[in-house]
Image 1: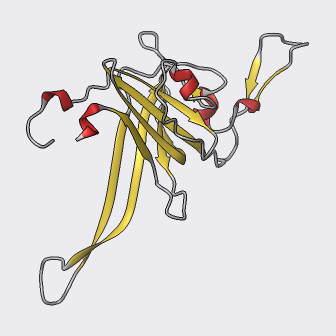
Image 2: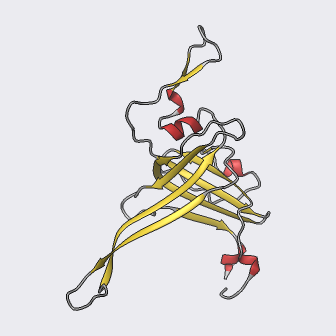
Length: 196
């Protein structure tokens, strides 16, 4: 419904970020146990209080003409769809997601050094494509879910280790085309505002 309606203002009070293999299905069921809805997905745990920054940037190239100083039209040249967030937990899921790799790259010599683990940072970058899911709630009745079925971490923030603040693994995750007319990303909303 058009016009001023305060019940349609959304505040992402709580949320979470999840990862899964490329092409994982976006859950469309909203049960009383969200973990069941997101079966097959891994929750990345605590993120910073900044939440998630969602960015969509389209690049338009102007078509110039001899007859006019203004463009005659625009041509779509590029679209970037990104999610930026900072993870607060260090574990077998988050560190490889930040650096590149998988939890199988973390090794342990349980005989010689029990409780000691090793993760080798690769000499060169490797492709680490995944699906990324985002869920946030506004109160008890409104839930938004957003999934990028194929993408990868394309930028990381500096990792600051300091005495007065938690270390954060900041990443920017960029959507990749699924091809064949598949969506770049999908929203699913449990929100009465769309009933109209």
